[in-house]
Image (cartoon, helix red, strand yellow):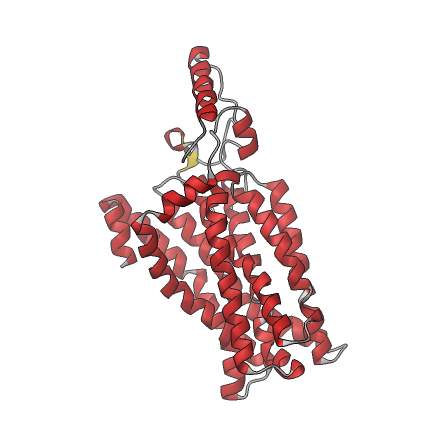
Length: 352
C-alpha cells in the first residue's frame, strides 16, 4: 500500500494513543466474533463455517459468492437465448460471436480498474455499484433491434464480470493465509456456478414459462427483466447487510485512524510491475477463457449441431458450469494444504 504522509501521521498517533491507554479496547466495530480469529492478521478468521452467516467474516463470505453468482446470472442471461435472438433480428453467426467476444472484452478492462479501487474503497461498495449499474442494460435487452445494438448491449452487460475481483478480494480481506485459498476457491467456484445455473434457469425454465403467454420473440425480449431485478436488489442489499473488513467498513476505519488512506494509482503500478502478475494473467486467461467460451457458445452449438430445442440445448449446456460446485473448492483446499507444508512453493505445485 502507498499512503499519504498525513495519513501515516494520523495512523501513528492513533497507535501511540492506544498503547498509552493500555487496556483500552480497540475502537473496532465488533469486539467479539463468531469465528476464531488471528489478531496478528488484522482479526481475520482462521476457520470457515459454511452454515454460519454471522458478521463480519461469514456474512462477507456468503455475500461474496452470492453477488458473483448473480453477476453470472446477469452476464450470461442472454447466452442460451441467442439461437432465438439471431433469427428474429436477422443477425448472422459472425455477429453473434462478435457480441460474445465484446462481452468478455468488457470484463477484462473492468477488472483492471476494479482491482486498485478495491484497495481504496473495499469490495462491498464496488459490488453494489457494479451490480446495480449492469442490471440496467440487462433490463434493456428487449429493446435491441440490430446487430450493433446487441454488441453494444453485451459490452455494457459484460462489465459485471469484473465482480470476480471483489469476490476474491473480500474473502482475502476476511480470512487468514492458512485458509484463504479454500475461502477464495469456494466463493469463486460457487459464483462461477452461476454460469451453468443461468443456462438452465433462463433457457429451460423462464423462457418456456414466458412463452406460454406470449410469442417466443416477446418472451426473450422480456425475460431478462428477471435477472436485472435480482441483480439490482442484490447490489442494494449487500451494501447494508455486510462489512468491508473484520474491524468495520473502510470509511469508518479511516476516520478512526485505524486504516491509512490508499492510493489506487500506486496500487495499480505495484501490481502491474510485478512479473508474477502477468504469469498468472496468462494462466488464468487460458483457464477461465475456456469457461467463458463454453458459457457463450454451448447452447447455440447444441441447437445447431444436434437439432435440440432452445430449452433442451440450454439444459445440456448448463452441465459444464455445474463442475464449479466442487472443482474450485477442492483446488483451494489442496492449495492450503500444500502451503502449510511447503509455503508458497506448495501453492505453485498445485497450480501446476
